[in-house]
Image (tube, helix red, strand yellow):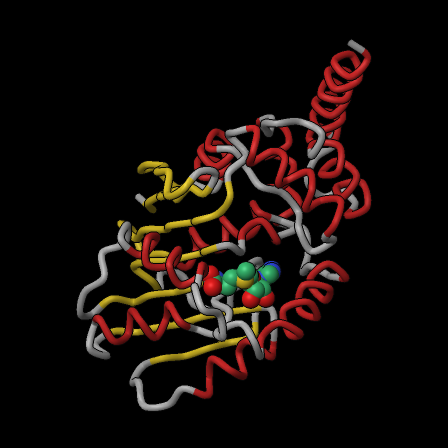
Length: 269
Ligand SMILES: C[S@@+](CC[C@H](N)C(=O)[O-])C[C@H]1O[C@@H](n2cnc3c(N)ncnc32)[C@H](O)[C@@H]1O
């Protein structure tokens, strides 16, 4: 009973705070307040439209920090060396599942966000027989160093960059992939707005990540939030739909890969 009362009051407090902050207007929003609002909204299972509006506004403010990105870079730098040395490669398996939702063919302009050691980028480049443009970005310099070690594939490019600030021209890509990385982004709306910007009309995005629709997904989210400061949030299918729409992307479909993993597909109109 006590828990029920507490979580519903938190939900209400979060909604009210977000609405209040959204009403303050874009320019006045301070990063610390936004961080607090994100923290509060994490108490809810589903994002309110006001929270998403607030994140969008924050996205237009200024270049982001951040200690959060630096923490992610340190964590993944430390894991880069052994990232490709697993007997069962769970990450590769998931990337292949996610790529099934993108139209991989010759001439494709492909971007992988949070590309790690670049496996998906190389896989797509091979499938397209080098005909196209194949880019990967990651916040971890060591991951990108390793990605760059593979030589011999034409038109492959890896950059150290944040998904929240993409070093590409508008309309550069026809397909974008993001596997097991989106939950690390402090400013998810900013990342989606950047993806929208760099996609061409008709371009497709596939985000694969643990999704908080189920009790297991929410339990994993709560657990990671306690244990890993690099983790921000696992979103629900309805969160993705709302965020895609707010970023100007059309929702195509969300598909369960292996519960609670889901692929969320959207398109730029
Ligand atoms: C679990 S690994 C997944 C790598 C790859 N996508 C895969 O599925 O094998 C998460 C990756 O996201 C990257 N990452 C975290 N935050 C990021 C950000 N803001 N921008 C770009 N990459 C980020 C990490 O450095 C790490 O390489």
